[in-house]
Amino acid sequence: MATSRRSRKRRAGEYRAPVTRRESRESRARASDPSPQAAPRRPDRPERPPAPWGSFPLVEIVILVALALLLIGFFISGTRGTVMILAGVSLASLAGLELVLREHFAGYRSHTSVLAGSLAVVVLGVGFWFAWPPAIQIGAGVAAFAAGFYLFRELFKRRSGGLGFR
Image 1 (spheres, rainbow, N blue to C red):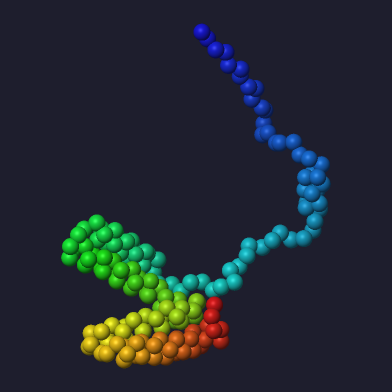
Image 2: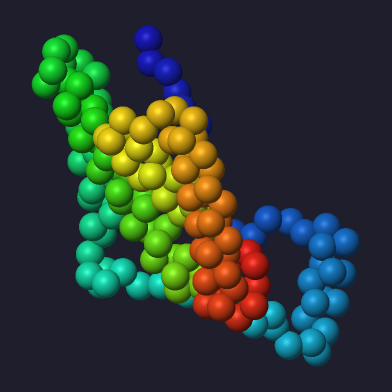
C-alpha cells in the first residue's frame, strides 16, 4: 500500500510574515524618529580587579578540585574519606577567601562580614589549639569579629572613595 505525500511549494526569495496595520504603523514611526540609537550601556560598576596570575582560571580550578575531593571523600569510608572532605572544604574556603580579599581590597565590592568572620574563625581556632576556656574563646572570637568588621569597613571606605558598601 503506497501512501502519497503532498509536496509543498518552495517560496521564491526570502519569506516575510504578513504584518498587521499596527505593526506597520509602529515600524514607520520608529523609522521616522530622529532620536539616536541607544548606545551600548556602560557598566555602572568598575571592572573586576584582575587576578595576579592574569587570565588563568586558578580559583575555578581550585574549586573544581575541592568539589572532586568532597564528592570522592563522601564515598570513601574511614580516615582517608574524612581527610579528603577536610581538604576539599579547606581548598574551597581558601579559593573563596582569595576572591573576597581581592575584591575587597580593590574597592570593588565590600566583603566586610566575610573577612571579619574569617578572622574570628582563626581566633577561635587558636583558642581551641591552646585549650582556652570556652568563655574566653567566645569573648575573643566576638572581639576579633567586631574589631575586624570596623577595620575592614574603614579600609573599604578608603579604597572605594567613601562608600561603605557597593
